[in-house]
Image (cartoon, rainbow, N blue to C red; front, top):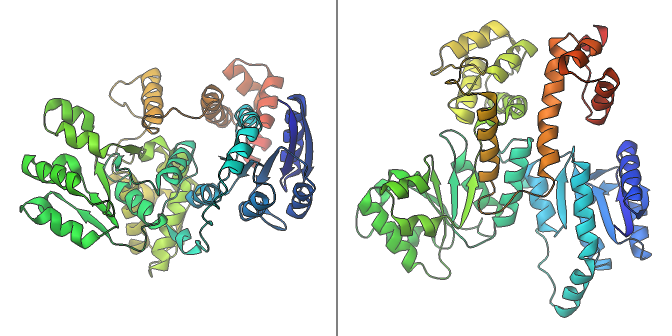
Length: 464
């Protein structure tokens, strides 16, 4: 890799790690904790690539990108951020950032993306010169969107955010799949509210809305050039499917964008003959797979905080989970997914008076839930290998017809390694010698991994 990289991050450790890694890769590096300094370097003509954090002491890295593009249209910018919300991904996409990586990022993956960005720089410059037409200005104030209840910082949700950012203004139909309660309709509504169609109607239709012959055209008249959601497409009978297919054939160029949700595997439904082939292929232009809650356990705590805060804002008792109650929440399978979690916590805010939700109270709440299966219980005889394969298939399915970003091997190993070491440390009471023995690795290797993977060693572990 050859070139000069400008790094802007207020974390000295991040600046040091990136400087050392990029230098070893053959680059020259200028690193700063100031966006003002970064812009001065850009204006002086330095750098072949910018890597910038978002929240900086003297400004916002994403908001600086239009200025960088105006000054140096051919200079690619990679955004790295601990603010791992959907809005970060959307805003990075809006200002044409070359790439966006949530922290903690995979260093080899970042280096590969940096190399690709600099390699393509000349092509970008040539394209910019050939196309002198100005790009549309990024949207202005999007602060009203910050309240969107899409909560999740796990890698699988970050990938979903990236896909939403890429397709939100596409005219292609969108198929949103996932189990009941995962938030499929919320994803559809988010796509609409973030898109250029947000000033137009958003209408959700069910099979009942296609019972009469003229129902489809009535829906199109109501939704105009907004978004029409076909909710739970697998429940549509043959007549309703035929009317939907005819509707898709007759849509005007300025008609609505079509989205559909489904709990079941529609490809399988098509193979079984319960879903029209033409309808499936017309609606699966872009497929977004929403993960089950059990597949993103690390999102449970921020989701719980969000729902408890939401309930308090609606007038319920302000409450929070005790560490012991949170442990139960993390260990439960949540067959009803996000909707079940939200309803359970809302019920606790209405029935309890103490500020802290204790373990015993959460136990009682979970005992009343249907299919109360713990992750620690028998999951139908599924082996660890089978469970891992199921999660990996879901990860690939999330990308639809696209492949995941390069560097997948290292990312997957990291995602497995971190919880493995954390759980082993907990199981051995924080005794690193016993933990290393349990894992079958050298104690110094364990210490090195704790540092490299930024594994938090709690006070309880330190005292052990």
